[in-house]
Length: 300
Image (tube, rainbow, N blue to C red; front, side):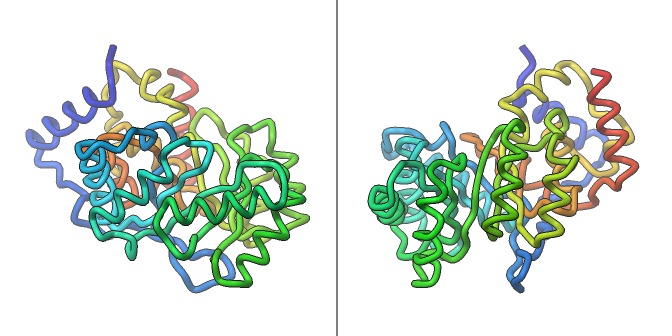
């Protein structure tokens, strides 16, 4: 089976033979968080599954290298959740091990029913991540949002939370999420969006722009489906004008949408983090090229 490792190895060999320059030394693109003057780098790091580890010295060091690669490339956002089992604790240990807390934009979620339970969970998330303040607190998959939202706003007023958000990972939830966007006007929403999951194009992303809501993107590779779809294929010549790998091709389609603030692919490999971060540098596909990317993917 062709894997992302195979694609990256082939890409390195091609670059070496063709004289292709790396984008690693370029500055990562950032986009302003609506309503503020704060810029957020366009590539971050998700922690679902890949940070859910026991926390041995080797596991912490491997993930410290991943986080350091993100930061060295100019990224900052790390996204987690209590639903991800041990991930919040590992994030905290990794940042502490590298002295990296000051470089991180920490996003996590509340994922429980009940006001007191939610408050307790949010406080525990901060303790696990070893921080006094959470940059972005999100209601995970809209769970008990009518109860949690006023609490989040209170914590934001108190300075414990900087930004408030709502998440879902399913296109089928877009209509419900848009209703919540209109009702609560969150600072952020987090949704799925990719070359083969483009439902947000129809209304959600335009609504986010209209309302001034920042957008985070999860599932950019659709759990590896996109890599499997291009198995055995070379990156098209026309795509090499803006991407050095299939991973960057997939991510740059997402970043090419002006409503997107940051995409958060998860990885447990430093080389994948470096490749992902490369999608935040160099030229982005324009509207015509993004249409070509869609046509190419639909014909695989």
